[in-house]
Image (tube, rainbow, N blue to C red):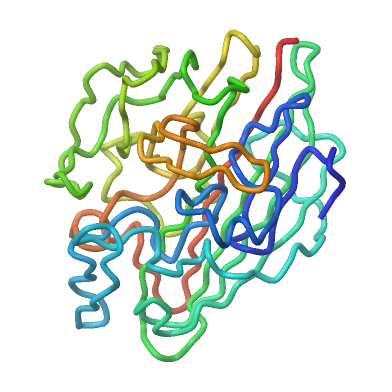
Amino acid sequence: MASDEAPFQFLPLGAIIQTFLVGKTNIVQGFPTQALYQSHNAPFFGETIGRVANRLSNAKINSLNGKSYQLAANNGANALHGGNVGWGKRIWDGPKPVGVRKIPGLQEIEGGESVEFRLRSEDGDEEYPGTVDVSVIYTAGTQSENGKEVRVLGMEYEVKLVGDEVEETVVNVTNHSYFNLAGKDTIEGTEVTLCSSHYLPVDEGGIPTSSSTGTFSGVTANKSFTLGPVEPDIDDCFVVDPSQASKIPINTRSEPLVKVVQAYHPETKIHLEVLTTEPAFQFYTGKYIDVDEVEGVKARGPRSGFCVEPSRYVNAVNVPEWRGQVVLKKGEVYGSRIVYRGWSDE
């Protein structure tokens, strides 16, 4: 790992993003050691989530390779974030320095560095079919914008089905960082703008109730709203363009980067932008965060961070119109990109 002042730090456990400094503020929630993540990270702080991010209805893949697969029910009746030991709880190989990668669609970054983490997920890992190789490449650097230094972190995900056990599997990968721009115990006062008000209405377990999107009450696309001490309470999957639901490629890396979320805190004057090639993003205001004080790190409670999880649609493998987004076949490549940009006006 880099020095304490390094603007970005990562861990082999879960290819976790441990540090994202804007000025001297670490805007991501986490812990000072890998061991503490292993013992206390129930909220998935900073983790790379897979094999399937978000929820699968009744912890089941209804039809894949001509059969169904029963998974671990670790979120009520549903499967969540890859199971009991998803990719965010596994030790990855890395970080390995690789040649500096360009981030297509983004102005060139200065002082760029790229590192790669790799993981093999065997056939039957958390009951998912097929052996896959997964990699995430982090590219970090800076940009200059209106006289401000903007810190940039790009993520490039790639997954290949490499075993001969099956002809297809299911994949949906994201990063689960929790952001706090306030430098305080909660995210209260953060001003947020979402690119879309279209979302997937869900049942009490967080599973979409139909293949149609709705319009989220209180959210207007590209218009800011302020996070209060309790409201708005959001944990929903927003859709960038509902008309494309059945046309999403398994590899989105050549799609244009879209700025899906902007956030700003008026006291710290810290800005965050999240861009992605993905068709959707879960926006979560952290209602269920509950982490005890540990080794000098104060407790984290509800709304101590908010999540932006760019990904495919929730439960897509079980919805005929959406399954093409997540079903990875032999010879294909799953891919996606996420970019975080952070800076301060001070």
